[in-house]
Length: 459
Image: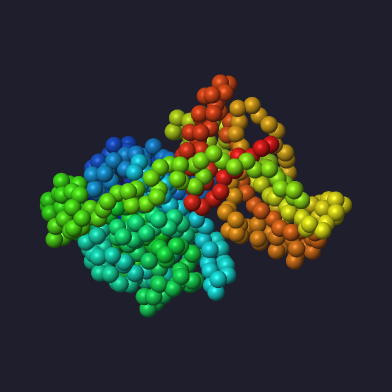
């Protein structure tokens, strides 16, 4: 029983993943991104291991999700082979749209930056590394990963991630709960679904730790069951599922049935009506950020600072390479964007003094490797501003606190952070350039629409 461990540049959990598969009686096969993807057909199942694929450039999982190997993996998953993505692997599966499983693998969720919340306040953000407790949520036979995990079974396993907060729109989440796709949830040590830190380590909606596709054979799980024997039931379940598939106990014909009841005495993996039919997300236009973008212009009583690297921006290079590998010939530039808002009572001189003081502190950029610049309008190019939704910009909040309280910058009302992505197509034809810019955006490589807000930036 061969399980391909999918490894991208930056994967670093392949060793413990292989050990967990061996403990469950399966044979791990290290399958690197540059191997012939047609060889995936020889595998009985797959595990996308954790780590930092492509250094999490742009955001965790997105570059790997656009890798040429992924369509082959999707094809194998459609044969009902199990696919388990752990931590960074979960981020990859979410960015591919393999989970939660909307038609056409459209993006339906995000794994956003951690927000540790207690008593209604954010008490921490960023990377979190600790033991957490998760509980099995659904009946054992609802997925390929829960055969040996009755509802309520608790597992104490490690978590180690910076972007693990599941964000899912409410109509879709409701349908997923009904379809038994919310396989694992964070709890306290007694099994209670406390929504606050530390029981919920990252602020995930509905305390979600792991979700599957409607068929139950693809699981995106943020904590690390492979790092402890306590997580072994997940891998034993995976083996049990493959055994039943090979023996014909579960047949592809029965899996395609529309019957709402259990398909056989062992597994009920066709849970479903399609998710699209049960939610309001029925068209690409319903996804946030896919309609015509609002135009950003610096608000009154504010000033922008645009920051560019002196050296090569490897993040922009990786994004550009990923797009070119998908047949989208464009050049990419990336810059940080800061919006400084002044107190309404400040006069022009006070605003100038405050802006100069902000730059002198070095809080917004490091002059040893960065410089402030202005954007020069370029024919055929398109610039997109990506920012957190209102009330979620913890970076901007931290900078505001530092500048006001530590550096005593007067007249400062607040800071907003963002990233500017400039897309320049390799064509002089205006219509072809517009199509290439659209194609680049439609990959969601610049932002996940459930985690960030996008604007068309007017230079």
